[in-house]
Image (cartoon, rainbow, N blue to C red; front, top):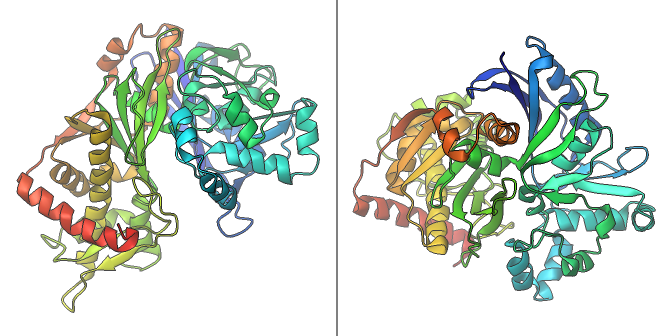
Length: 494
């Protein structure tokens, strides 16, 4: 009798539920977008009820055509760092969720930097001080929502990342837990102990009582209750933050294996095994996952804020194309960008610079420059910014990258993937299943259900679409990288 795993993939702009079978095949899926809320410039919020409603709706839609009694378990993957605080008794959020993109705590973070706390915080958490992470957001809610701090001290409130909020709702308020991968993105968990750090809680003025219990990524988190759309008693056996889930779903189980998700931004993770590798190049150290009682697996992470969004800007901002898919044909009309360089810092520069004030530039324009040159320069920039991050990762880890596994919408662009292989000097591997975040959540939940006994067994269900091998010389590769970096330095003044 066929058994199924549901993967809840709660993202920044939409919620999706994917149904996988015991062969790791995608059976069916449902997806629903929800509104983005921008109360002020630089502020980003979500209504937690929108997140929960879209979760229930997609659970119902995705399971319409299967026997719901055959659902063996659930895995959760989620947008990370986004914070929800709610009343323990009523389940009502005290305000909208503060999204990972939100910059409202910039001033607070700058004060921490001025107090020379950056090194201490990085040594404990592996993170750089930035509004991106959850701790400053929780601090803001407690300070700015009337009565929140007093209610928190009375243990009337609960707080968590989106996985924690969904787990609470799925279990009808019976379970307040998170996993190590999400906890490692809060700036409150100690990487070595995998527990909330008392010194950091004091620094950010967060009462320990309102935080969830930290558990391995694969364990028995709880069971469903009174959802209506799916039966009671379904075990939730896996939770991973979305980028860690993509690393898992790509089968990057060994130290030195890496993946890049080409989404709105690009998100790169390199598995460093059981060793914590602290970055000297402004990258992040994070927990990749922890399976049951096994030792945790760590990763180095870096990302660019703008990747696929650069193509959207060419479409919506400049009107160079009508559909994002047209970028590949337009860029293919020329064999080079003819000296045109684009640094897509449209939302600041991420790793390894972390300059939120930086703004995008296009250099090298002549009267002979055409929109095809700008299109090609855009794709090249998307690949080259990843090369900069991956070079820094290899320096930090001491590991040589043999291949890069790719996913996300822009990974379907074969010209971009060939550029990535050429400029990186490593093979780029594209999978058949692009929904690697949901796939990763399903795989780790499946381990907990006994669908598979080990990560070694999981490699049998992974399927690739094609490989892209480097086709230029190392000298050409370095010259291209150096040319692009000259334009980057105009922004960084490094």
